[in-house]
Image 1 (tube, rainbow, N blue to C red):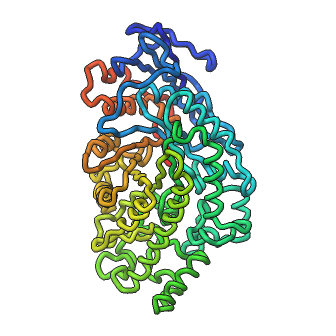
Image 2 (cartoon, one colour):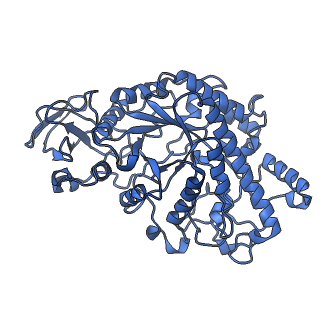
Image 3 (cartoon, rainbow, N blue to C red):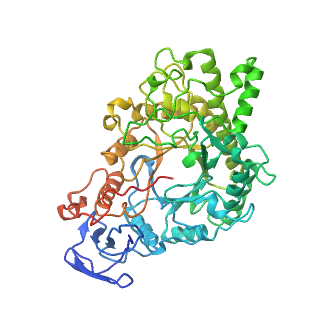
Length: 532
């Protein structure tokens, strides 16, 4: 789907002729008033590449001058200082380092500026910028996008992605994948020997396995090259940088890369400690602990991906091995490995960007399945030693505080009432626990939603979290721009959401009209956009 934004001095309350010469579409539409300062209406066009294209054009007009002017400045600001960002498409830059659907993105940026959105988030992929050889960087596509964002007058948050994406398909750098073919131990492995090849195992952080360099050295040089290449944007257009900490950019083990089948409730996940280097570290730790037999492997009674807590002994609610001395030994080691990895990467990023006015952040997942059980098994397999008797997030928050970094928390559109009862899930309680730890240690929090169309009453839950003074969220990034985001099913709702954030007490003519609310998309009502 392609989105086009047109400014017109002719737009009043009557009908307006709208012509899009590039896309060959003409039509008559009645502008729908969203605020006393601007009007947005919806029409049809062809564009943003999809298997089943959604047809939509966003047309914007004000009464006095074209809204597409670079001079446009949104006067409304989010209440309580909460800034609002929108994520750009994951594949905004192609693997050939060109901007994908550039006209649509430009028009979308102008539409967001019109709405009063503060900025956008851009995923910068290791597998694109350093694709062919170590130290050979190509930032051209990302520089072009940064210039587009700067020209529109929005701020930019950069996500440095040291992982791969499956949908859309964005692999690790070609030279890294070649190394992985001959040295598969650079990847995480589960008990069955299945490898997770979308990011490197944290156990190789300090091992010179990448053509003589360690991953930490490679990440450091990547960040340094980015800093020098984008120096003219840092602190002005680019105000924030997040560093990828693991799978999907999150600080966790890939304990759920084998999804539940047949729409079953998600299982507890599986420990990822079976690659050669993780087992070597476990062996060393057990010998130092004085019990070498504990370091021969992971737990023999550990769960598999789709099992429920009481299907195995290790995470069984009552009498499970997690409550034994061995369980404490293993879970402490497993979680500390993850925390140390996060500390290394946050420290790297913080030291790289400490002399430029940008805020460094990292993302922590909201592993809320089975939170209401005593053992919290999904969190254990993901690397968070959080149980009914132990707070597993204080140590995580400490590394963010130590490195003066912000924490990004997803899932702010999720509510307990819409979770399956049998999953014993509580996203609200887990979110509150993590944010409480952040407040105690002075760590600022940024929020994200789980997906653009994934949660019932998601907008209401987001507003509830942002308006709750106990949450203390200062920035929220809505994920993510794309075909569904701009569809007639979704974009009017997002527009109303933004207006209610920036203007909590709306005038009657600020509300969506019945005509706008009744517009429906021709195709793709159930499209989901991925979160980086």
